[in-house]
Structures are given as structure tokens and as C-alpha cells.
Length: 136
Image: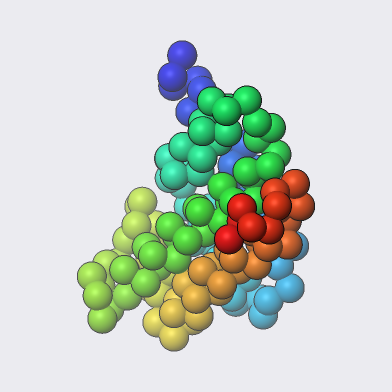
């Protein structure tokens, strides 16, 4: 039962991540790198926890989906930067080349920065059902 619940919510989050990332108007390498970094697997536990809280309070999941996507982007940003040569210098994450190995170190820094910055833009632009003071 829990396994099915997590799978269903992970698919919901992934669908919404793709929806938002497909609308990017960034330079191609940055947009592709953002997609590569976020859509490379993962359990999506952080956004699922947000959705669970909404369900517990009887709220519509739609009000939290932009924030759930943003949470996953922030998490992915932290992984991209953590993998950089100046930090852990990892070659692989989840069986795939790390972002800096695939796109280059400078590009990976910009990709991570774009994920972080875009996450806040996403919350501000897409969370229309939530009062601004609550978003802050």
C-alpha cells in the first residue's frame, strides 16, 4: 500500500517537474542540463512529504505542486553543486554521469544556480492558490 502510494505521488511530481522544465526559455545547454539533473531518478521523498501534509489537512494537492517541484529542484541543485570537483568530485550519480562530467564544470555551476533560482520563480509565479504571505 505504501509502495503504491509513493509510486503514485512520485509519478505526479515527475509529471509536474517535466511540465515546468519543458517551458524553460533558458539557453539550450542550461535547460537541457536542468532536465538532466532533475529527471535522473530519485525517490522524490521531499516533495511527497509536502503532498502528504496537504492531504492530512484535507487540502488540494494542486496548491502544493509548484512548491513540491521547487523543492525537488532545490534538492537537485544541491546535488549538482555537491558533485563538483571543488567539493566531492563525483563522476556518477544514480548510475549516470554527474552534471559537470556531462556538461562541464562551469556549465554545471550555472545549471545548479538556475535550478535554485528557478525554484523560487516557480513558487512565486505558479502558486496562485496560496496567499503571498503564506508563500513567504
